[in-house]
Image (cartoon, rainbow, N blue to C red):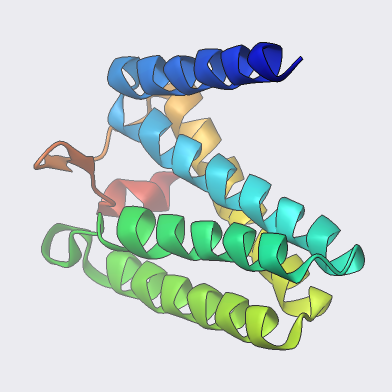
Length: 150
């Protein structure tokens, strides 16, 4: 039974890696939002179950995605006010998740999930419609003023 789960986990990891390689920049942003949302939802379950180690791991993963993925991919020069606003929003979300981790509080995590879902909907629309693809710097998706069209 242990071998079965290890195989399934490896298959899932390869699937994610393959999806990342094949994804366009808009789809990569969507994947980061989906990962952060999934980690936050997992943290909510762990807070309810009072599994504090698992809660911390899930929230740390969500924070990492927001800070090292979404926030670092912002191109403030090309993105202008939208990139600056997103940077502030990402900083706010990370702070809320840090506080939720310290206090094992559901409300901040639920708030961040709501914000991430709203942003994700805009990027899903962009990725599906290919309205205008964000610019890419160092193979990392960038936010541009094209987001205003969504």
